[in-house]
Image (cartoon, rainbow, N blue to C red; front, side):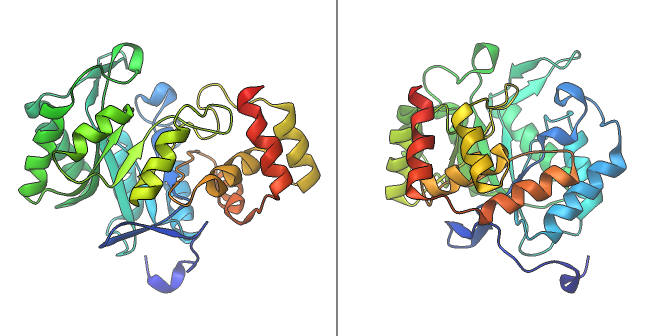
Length: 295
């Protein structure tokens, strides 16, 4: 892909994850490029390739993925669609889980598991070093893992020292686990579930913002249970926008350290998500939307 074929825009502005790593605040989450249940191949691989190429054309420079999406499938599609990668494009992946034969999600956070996962990501993405690797803690039913993450995060810190990973983050973690990780190695991002209706991490968002650390909400639109709110719909109708766009715009205005990675397998939905980065909410809009979480 030639540089002059890409639109030189930066959806939602940019954020400096690290001195050598700037990304657009509006990124793209690749989870939905795999088959149903994030397992197996997509129904239309060509459409998945088209969505990825369109994201880059629209100026997105932050793609979130994992080699356990599929497994392997999503990363292989990313490589097919975008390799050799543009210099400004940064791929963030995560490790700490694996899939069983029926698509179940299982913890995989031993040092050996993590080393294997990093090498799987490198191989399937066609990279020699990964820009950012998030440690995804895994408890029962996919929730955050209990207790200490020191052994697992320490194993990733060793891979960073070996030069296989540039930067580290954590995912599905408590504030205490964030602090534990920071005592071992620098943390450039935290990825937890958060949106306009589910705001348990409000204090953590603000704490990280004060430290210049990115907060990357997954399920920004509600995930497997899409956001449903009369207030959200009302604000969207008045602005002539979709509820999806308003929910994403609220996140971008919530704090300058929030980076978005909404996922979709549709070019139309992708364009709608990117357009949300230019939607400006008034103070009255924000006040109304802030009330959703307490409703």
